[in-house]
Image (tube, rainbow, N blue to C red; front, side, top):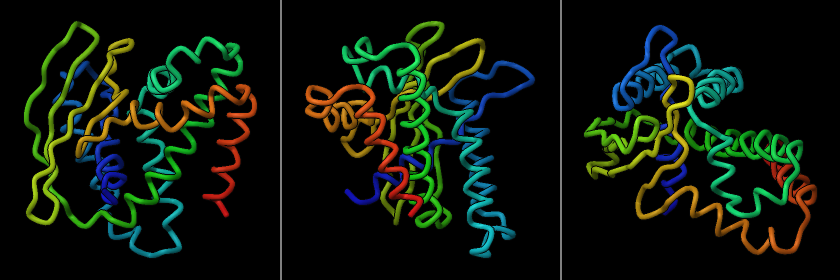
Length: 199
């Protein structure tokens, strides 16, 4: 469905508290609202400030997602075919691609959608599931966020919406490429996609 990129972008705002450790659901609640305030700020309605707004959203996204865990799960067993330096570069380039792709969609499509915060389920002391609901044109769309706690900070590493699992979706897209191309070729491919988005 064409709106799944919007839903993915909408939940990127669970930036961790710097004052005290929050429960996963409360972290999501406080910081989705933080991101929405940026989207609704009148000063960014001028197209000349669109890039500035996107940069602020990108900073929040970097604080929100555990891109290393997301990348590791997307690559699955192929993760171990990358050297430590290649892993770091893949995480950096992959996260930059995701940010540019989804934040642009979010800026284009956000129009005051409401988010309901439903529940959290603690899987362990460092893993949790958080359930939220986005109201889209009178339709309530459930989303499940998988979160991990590193050094007292809860971050999202996967999500499911509209029957689409983010890790599984990207893993399937990369599966055939990973079997044919070297790590550096895959990294170069991602850099090409970033250049196309910038173009």
